[in-house]
Image (cartoon, rainbow, N blue to C red):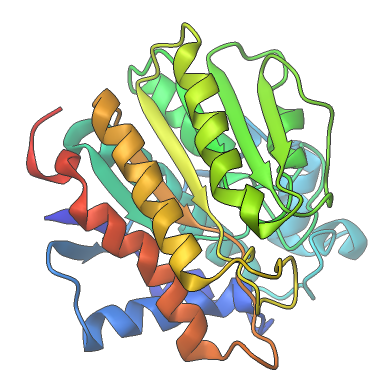
Length: 302
């Protein structure tokens, strides 16, 4: 069974927004319409010392206490006492998925709201950067090198800023929006697809390029965004359909399969709009889960 981590604490904040609610929607869908091979598992909350290893202690304290309020709300949420246990749980799930993938090949977490967070503040609905926290935890568990693959509609500038100077972590980032953009570098390769016809070829080209480089990655941490979808009001690009995103998910997991590269996935962007309701958004995120169950890595020892 492939472990997918989820806790009701993932949605424990009073602030109602897709990032703080959709984990439950996806979990409920898995209970109602299970995907063969998935086991929902509740993770341990993230120890605060793993957060302060990546984020400034003053910022972490603000998220915990709500003081100062502006810093505690720098990600864009109204602060309440449920925010702290929520982000410890969801980031704990990202770490648990990384550790489980190293052991079993593929694992995931229904966490989201990660890649824009900086060292000293939140940004873009992201409180703590669980991608980097998970990558650091994987290194501590024995991984020699980690790839963060970011296919959210928006750029992962928070991740790029946090991995600068850490040669064991690299980022591959394909976006359709310039939000949170940054200059490409040796540690963070970035590309933007300017049209729907360029999207899958750009993802394929970037995977090929990073595969050609002399990196022996031990883990891929995959930020699986569904906000490139054409009907998503925040980040969506005309012509990127459900079929496009299904093909992308198959491409990612097949790429890891060929390299026997363990992969830990989390949910990234995806937002409700006039043409995208809760059921439609959940069905998009289930594309990632479905592709993960088809991975050969779920059926053999790494």
